[in-house]
Image (cartoon, rainbow, N blue to C red):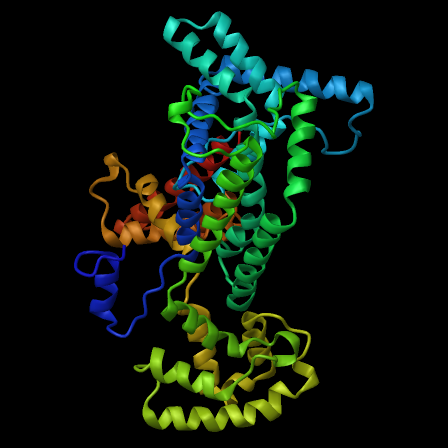
Length: 457
């Protein structure tokens, strides 16, 4: 997409030379988190084992049934012992999620689901060890069972869950269809603070949760004061005289968090951060605390040179001075937190006409660093809409189908009976190409809804 010669960026720049390219923040965050999670060798091996476990447990409907049955039995036992509380929507059975680099938040979901379904997963692996069709499958299941029952696997499982739990809020915020720039920047800062706190002060709390999990599931804890032995534990293979506690706390716990902090700091380029800082000057949060006329004029001059002439920049500065007295200091424009709310309030009060250049700049602020997570999903869905049997689909028809698919929240509100009634109310005439096109669009939309229903089921 970012290719300077043949990618989507080149096509945009051909029609709009002043367009500013902002790579998908959610995609960049996911790549950074995956890189940070797998940079350490032990964590990389953990994810390889996790993929094998999830694949084995979910390889067939029979194993899915065994997993759910084991989960139901475990819930019933805990309810009888008083360990769980009953309630509407509580104690639902779930399945395991597979971690995938291209699926945002999948690593957190995979770690969280395995912790929740740990005992049922172990039961399924034991069943595969006994009843597997081939020796190979039984052997893989035995290796997976030995891995899932080890302290190192459980420790890294909880570490991944704790780290990804902190970054999950930021990841979800960056995937929103309408993204608030200022809040996203604040979430980046708060995510770094929470990760640093986890590293510096929460080791005891974290290890306590790991120890309770091991005691609950009869997992043997190593003696943390003993020497950590690598390889076959021969003296010639040991590089350093370190304890087991040092290995888990420094070499794994601190190393993973430090790499996450470094990746979060590096994922935003200086130019992108500067753009976000300038855009944040429009934020109405905290009574327009970030409002700055010089920053907004610089935003128009540097990043929107084709949208504002030199004369308009001068007029923009004058409008901002009036805007500060008329809007910023106006109590009627208080109690807002996002730039989108501010834009809507300007339209409602009619001030968008009086401050037309400011209104234009606000539109650019809302669309320039676009929430490209939606665009990423649209490109992924193109393979669903334009399949091999539809290889003759033209660009216009493809665009119409993609609009219906992308805006499916609006399309779902349209009832099929209403569409049929509209066609029935038309005057009888010979069908044209437009009619056939409309009918095909309706069929695609219905098939799309049917696919969504099947996926949910």
